[in-house]
Image (cartoon, rainbow, N blue to C red; front, side, top):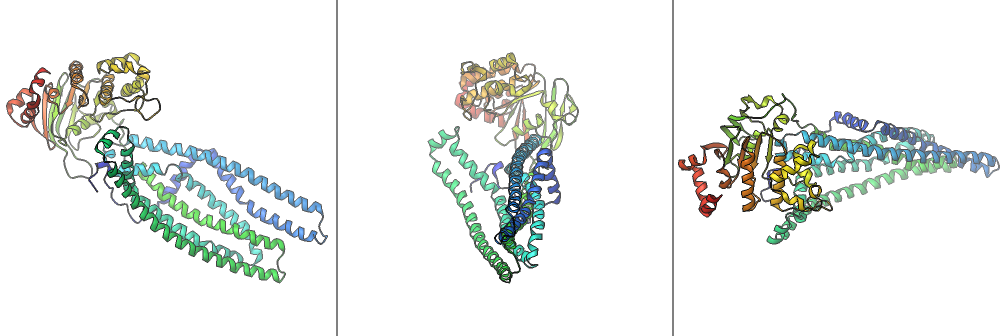
Length: 612
């Protein structure tokens, strides 16, 4: 397999000794109860009442058959038969009513539960640190959690109620069948066990198989998305690598198929053996009952109890044991959900509230290392930048430029050294309050499939209706093209939804710049701000940048030296270490790496750089 991005690399293999935590059962029931107490009570009550009806129907049916036999001999009146029939019909009507209430309450409870759990997952995802999202295991846990939202919590609750109902049914029906002989019920119960064993065994194997396939399934879905992406279709068609993508996609499918075929073959063989064993045990019980019938020891009604009771008991026992197995399996899946919900949070509101503007930012011997790694991404970084100054970060890919931005904006916290804001340790203050003084455009800026207005106002969503503010930000970013859109600022963008208008890369980037300008912050961060712009648009953007940065602290990350040279200070990074620092002219005079990179780039368009 070719190398994959970090977020797609295989996670560590799960522990093969899968264990259920008893506390997960209580936590799952708590989720169900909190989702909708009223519907939970109605569902449980109707389920238990329904569980008593089979025995009642069997008994009334027995009485009715016995009375019909006696009526043939003229010993029973028509009125008696009608009374028993009325009772039987009443039980049927009651069963239908309970079934209707049960189904409706289950559906509404399931919907409430899905909403409640989905909200918890989204709340959890919102509270995770950015570092967590750069970890493949987090993606796996998130996907597994979402996959179980729909049915697993409700499955545990319904199966638990089903167990209680099965006990009611078994006790009541069993009491009727024991009148036919003490060996009848044990044989019928024993006949139910083989199929339950097979179902339980391969249910666990299915769970293990799905856990093993989590990563491969995600890669297969990614390959499929490459073939259906509206943004990538041009490149895929031009280079003609559809067969390669389809081939890799099919390789993953065939891998899944091989595992599935092996499991289906084994399950089918064991399932047939279980059915054969059950049939032989039921046959033995039937032979013993027929012997008693031949001796005149049981009535026609008693025989009907046996015949109908076999299916009832088998179904109930199978449901009971499968319910136990189902609860166990569902709780294993629930462990995926709880494992995700138990990931450590990062409270962005923890700490003192930052007030006022940021006048100085100082990095003091700052270092950073990702969790569970032994390599420093940054080491001993020192610099100071003040209001009205622009600091540029230069270096090859992977040098640590973006990591500095993430530390600056409190997306990451340093693992060594400290960051001072106006001379105060940044870690004293809540990340959220500090971030309100910062506005940024990332190299991989968001292209939100929303209206143009929302794409700008997301920077401060409480100002969504600030018409003047949005228009001012759009003007400063040079995104006047929005006036030509069918509905202006209210035009939906992108192709994901009907009526959306797709933009070019440069137009999306101008909108991202407008989002940066919309937030009135004291620190501006530009990560490749002109990467998708043409020469004229780049010149206009840089002119606007100079104007906006006069009374602010500005950070620039760019591979274009026409942009970098505008900075008051330039830091050159190599392997996470600052190797050079100074102004553009000072670094050129130094003749180091910056000068080499500058001369290499400038050699192709030296005249154009001077004009800019």
